[in-house]
Image (cartoon, rainbow over all chains, first blue to last red):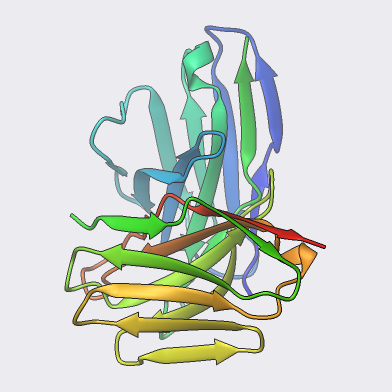
Length: 118
Length: 114
């Protein structure tokens, strides 16, 4: 299947700093990418949907100024957690749909980023 | 919006037994139902999926059934092995609604004991 690369896999930062997470589709063009947040032993909660070349659509309750999403190309989306605080500590994971396939329901996930804010 | 309920939250079985995880969904327009397996600290991996025009799909020890009328679908794992231990998520989406988003169930932690 398609490969989605996510970096970094693990980040520890001080409170107040900003952290950027990258998600790349390696062998396909991802017209749409999704960003999820996952707390320990909980499900994947959709944060936002990003479409290449347009503004991201945020889910209810997710602060768009806090979680900046940029989808500048068909293979790269970034999530920046601005002014991170301890409550932002979580596992962040991206996923992408292969826009080039006829049946493009399948989502391919990145490997996730564990963010710990001290 | 779509709401997906998943049961049980935890499931313990002996190696060789069968395991069944059930999900219900609320949006009758949903037409795509994947199942993901997630090991601790790793990405979810798609293990099987089913579309609304099919009632059952099987892949070796894994099968999924769908009842559109009742709006529920189930994952069946036969001859379970310790390496099947993981968290399993069901999901639902409506692929006809522009860029479709997946709504996930809360997950089932499956533990297979040797």
